[in-house]
Length: 566
Image (cartoon, rainbow, N blue to C red; front, side, top):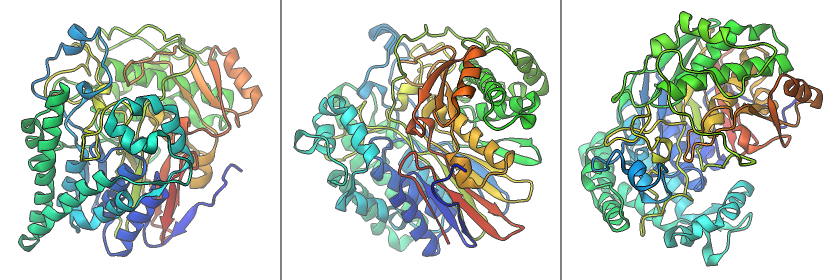
């Protein structure tokens, strides 16, 4: 009914990623004998090259892994604020705002996250999986419409820094669709890490990975980053870089309809996906017609409740106690559900229940939310049953490129609140609260289903719509992915300047006008999206079915995402 592409089926392995060349990179690794972790790292690193407006090789990379033996692990892949940054810096010197530039820099986590995954669960070296990204950086790739549009839309931002302008505005102009996009300095940075690994090749795979890691975090790359930060007035130092390793943390897990849903912890928004899903289930979404006004209303009000609890509680668990058991417990879910009026939308979001809450930003009077450079996604399942889910991120128009390196050290500080008293407020050594949140479902039939998307605060909304499309409405993956979507903005944005649009509900125009009118009658402030928009997320999914011995894969045409199976 909705799909413009077929769901892809195979019997051996499958990868779905936010760019077709990234999917091909992961597939090449699988065909060469690598496992899901090797392939996922190859696809993820490639996304940092192929989506240079939305993902950075030196950005964030949260990873969720489930091994064939049932072992589950999350690799946070999220850097900390520099140890020397004053907690009150943004309140004291910047009027409570987090400005563009180096002050929003946290420790770049992605290289460590990929290498940690390879060390713990992979079979290949860094050079084996990074060769595809390196080639696309060195030789270039074709500019696609969304990349061309983003560079055009943010031309003034890119022009602000010479290093960014040299890459994104060659000859002083935005590139056109089908132009070759080359990142020579980034290729040299990746090549240096590969060369350092090769020098240690005689000592074994793990020694080689350690050498590649040291090249970035303690070698010439770290020195260049630290020197640039010092010149630009930033706080990131060699000591911050050398001390960094991604935290290994347990997944948050809950059972739903006989399936087990896995997310990362409250250092990201993952547990809000679980809370919203459990609220929807108790609210009776299983009895409602797909994308009817009542269905969309219940879904949206449950999202508001979960996002309220994200606002009031989520942050780095190393710095605060996040009451996840209570938030996902029956008593709290029942209390939140009791606040939902089946006939009337709440303007804004519900108040706090387990603490005194936070000071909310004033409602934003802009016509549309700011578009934040944010994220891509990759999912892999291999022939042995290992599954990989990762959401690499960090854009390129809000902070400067380090000269000679072609990278932007993670600017994810934009997701901390400037007020240090906020649960995700700035503090030395603390992690921001991340929107990227890779997820996975272990199905009642014993299969695995890694899934995820870019889209900032839209992420868990798009992900849950696809999950319900597959597991409640019985759609094939591709149909479930392409079905029309909607998203609430009725809570503070995760990104500076933390826009807040109480009551706003954006709806793709493929949802009938009569449904949109019925939602407006319930009090939702409807904003029309085009029939398919990249703002609605770009969900990628791989799903195994042990009973049939098959793998299914789908990818979202709202961006240049593709899946490959065998």
